[in-house]
Length: 187
Image (cartoon, rainbow, N blue to C red; front, side, top):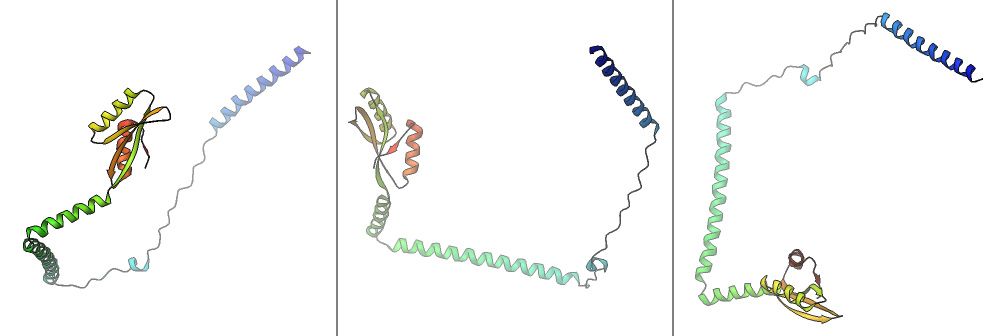
């Protein structure tokens, strides 16, 4: 039984081999058919392009004069704008000079008060430590950065909190996070 199978398989294998060899020989002998030439049809031109454009003959002097007048108009506009800006600056300077020194200092104080009013004071916790020495190190680092702070003993931790006076708390918080690794807003 096994021999019969083996003979059948070998016969089939030989038949496939001879078939593939014969097919290759036949394909080599057959000449490839020539492909027909590719024909490209011209596209019709739109009506505008089909007709030649007729331009009016203008003397070049007139065109040059138009360009020059446009340039002159633009230059004149720029000069007028600059004069207006200069006159505004002069008027502001005159107003400042007319003010007495007392009024000038009052204006400066009012501006400072507005800036201070916009800034709010926030308390940010920059760390919670088990050992007080570590909390003191963090506090001294914050003080070297220009912050005032304190150490609060709470929940078996020494928490370091600093006061930040700013109008943009996110920027201050990011600065502290970059320096201490973590920071949270307490109030």
